[in-house]
Length: 170
Image (tube, rainbow, N blue to C red):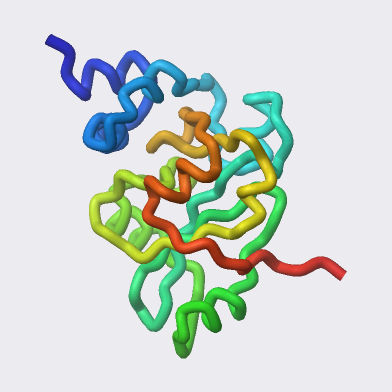
């Protein structure tokens, strides 16, 4: 009998994330998860390792909105406009969460946070820029693992609200 831990070891995915994939009926993604010997903590590192465009990386970023954690999913080539997040949430103050809050909220370290399968349930915002691609790559719970998924499915499984919170360039 196969266990989540065994599958996670084979795929490289974090055991909690492997369990989340099973619970969602996405076991096939374990076989599509890719592990790299070098860390893929940043979007640039992940894109280089995978051989895809920077915007095809889905960053999972935790912010604190009036002290409450919120997950923002953003394409790897863009930056989050914190003011737009604040407006979207109707919050007084929004700031990047520190490493301790990220780990406490998600159960994962910065650089390996997947878009779903977290320790606690949080509000999720997904920037529309992700929808520009047929497939995106996201962290599979460790800084060394990624998995592919269509943006539409990723947004749905993350329970995300589509928003426009990307920093606008001049």
